[in-house]
Amino acid sequence: MVLVKKAVVLVSGGLDSATVLAQAVAAGYECYALAFDYGQRHRAELVAAKRVAETGGATEFKIINLDLSSIGGSALTDMNIAVPDAGAIGIPVTYVPARNTVFLSIALGWAEVLNADDIFIGVNAVDYSGYPDCRPAFIEAFETLANVATKASVDGHGMHIHTPLMKLSKADIVKLGASLGVDYAQTVSCYSANDKGEACGRCDSCYLRREGFEQAGVIDPTRYSKP
Image 1 (cartoon, rainbow, N blue to C red):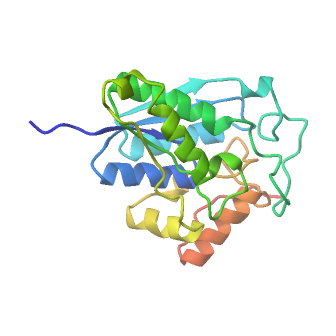
Image 2 (image 1 turned 30 degrees about the vertical axis):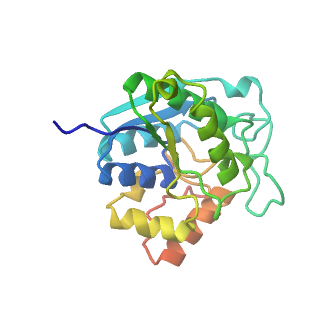
Image 3 (image 1 turned 120 degrees about the vertical axis):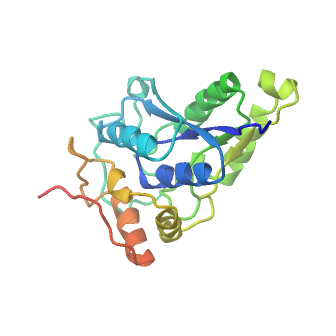
């Protein structure tokens, strides 16, 4: 009897998480895609997350409702804070306090319920916006926590946090996804996307995405809103 490898894959509807899902599926994992309605600025990414999960081979897709807007502190959850154009110095106001810590904690809980030992997340320490919870040190610390804080770890099942994009440039990610057949037209990366999923073309996420396609030599399918 062949044991099926199960994994929880965090999906945001963006380019990176769509690529990670494709990688996990290609590696033979039975993937359970997890997204969060956390009070973010736009709903388009949740629509995209569902679309990516359904077409990307996920066995199940789940949205968890949170309300990080109640604590604010980020341009993505507080409408009174404007999303800046690309080029901000330091940690930008689009950083959502403790977001990946919260997301991974819930993913860890679902993984325990599923008897899954693996969690995939599309964090990146090369082409990223300076978020502290996208660094290798954070992932290593969380994996250590996961392996002392769960029943699964006590029972001898080591929990593994996979970050296959950690050391890749955005261009390398695009090339990888293209080789795996990812349809990037289904994804939404923009911090200020409209209800149609059209990108602003000005924010840091739009800049990194556009530059990635250009450097990869892959046609950019991003839809932009009209001025």
